[in-house]
Length: 133
Image 1 (cartoon, rainbow, N blue to C red):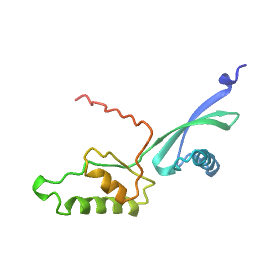
Image 2: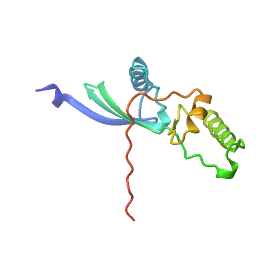
Image 3: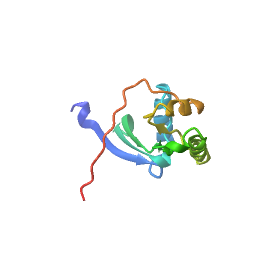
Image 4: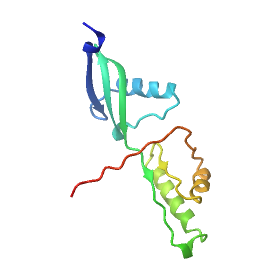
């Protein structure tokens, strides 16, 4: 029998995963410099052989901040900074593990840098599913 036939797959999440399973997954992420998963905001498909995890694919909810908009006549007044400050403070208050901001305006990178955010060097891909009415 080939090893591929021995592999089983199952989903785990906060309520269904053990502390040992989360520790294994987060340890593998840490080895690669990736953020740990939040058990309540993640679902992980694990591949196992004989009950031992040999691979996984994570789905995680990471807050996406945006868009940020201010009417033209109010730009430069501090409104954008206050909106950004209060949004980031909310994420800190709820103990978000991280967040994503798309800098689609030249005014956004300085705000991101103000909060110590890092610009990604990796390619980022997205998709938008159009919902049928």
